[in-house]
Each structure stands twice: as structure tokens, then as C-alpha cells.
Length: 87
Image (cartoon, rainbow, N blue to C red; front, side, top):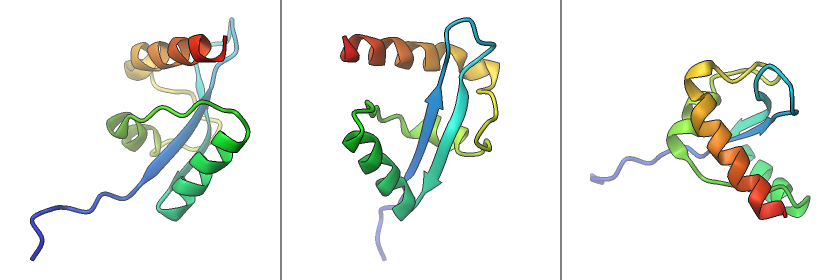
């Protein structure tokens, strides 16, 4: 018996437009589809950051749903980091 718990991969795409109410989920996937989503993002030049806890929480949301206020600070930090990467 393995001592390690296998964790299912999850990926979430988020978007924010300046002046908008909040960031929203544009895509979500788990398992093999999560790997494909990450690969597709990379192929299109979309930065990918890894945060398992945040991904697990945001994967519960449907595409089009706003990110809940409790996650705004961490998502804002991620979006600022991405902005710096793209410059």
C-alpha cells in the first residue's frame, strides 16, 4: 500500500478586465484535460502559474462565474505577476 495520496490534476483559466467587477473563470479542467489546458495555454503564450489550493477551490466554479471575494487578493497578486511577466 502506498503512503502517498495521488492528487488529481486541476487547471483553471481566469480573466480580468480593468474596471470590471471581478476576475472570472474562463476555463476549468481536471485530470488529463487539465494537462491539455495547461499545454494549450503555453502554446498560446498564456502564462501558467501553479497554486494547487487555489485551483482546487476555483475548479468548483462554472466558467463565466466571478471569482469569490475571498480569493480576490491572491488572484490580484497572480494577475500582477503575470502582467510583469508579459512586459
